[in-house]
Amino acid sequence: MMTTTTPTTETATVASSLRKLYFVRFAFAVVWAVLVFVTAPSAGAALGIATVALLVLYPLFDVAAAVVDSRTNRGTGATPLLYINMALSLLAAIGLAIASASGTPAVLVVWGVWAITAGAVQLIVALRRRALGGQWALILSGGLSVLAGTAIASMAGGASASVGTVGGYATLGGIFFLVSALRLGRAAKGL
Image (tube, rainbow, N blue to C red; front, side):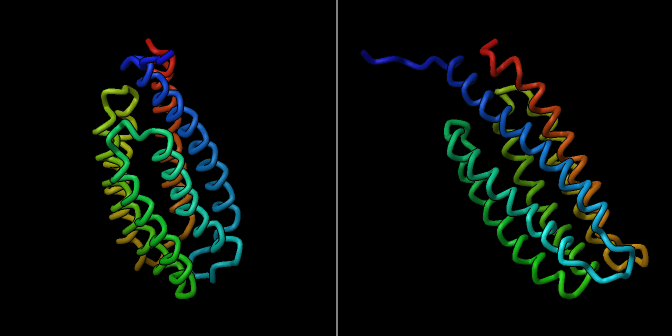
């Protein structure tokens, strides 16, 4: 017996998987940010191993989230963009590992460039998925990521440059994922 999938069922399935992923992304971002705030050195101090590991972990987690997203949500038209996001995040992880040897300013430049590019991709993906509902938070998040990345990169040369800044960035991004997950609740139920 062949079953057919209606658009409502497909939408509910995609919304449900995105909702779960967004809740995980929120939880990860908040826990990660707290750990960064705890381990971040004061301005001008050398980066510790724990901080460097956390800095590299964040974009690697983004790669993993994009892999899960692309495998479970092929019908949203976002898969090629998710591959771009995976490549950008992998390059960011490598760049952060290398930049950490040069100190906080170099890390902030790499993080800022990654936030700009990944934010632009997130904005486009969310725009393509807007019919699912719950995407306005990620549209806003992508746009703000571009602006925040510019600010983070530009503050790299300042006397008060701190890796803790990226903790605030991650927290705000996590909140946008939470809002989107909550807004996807209706679509996930097929309403």
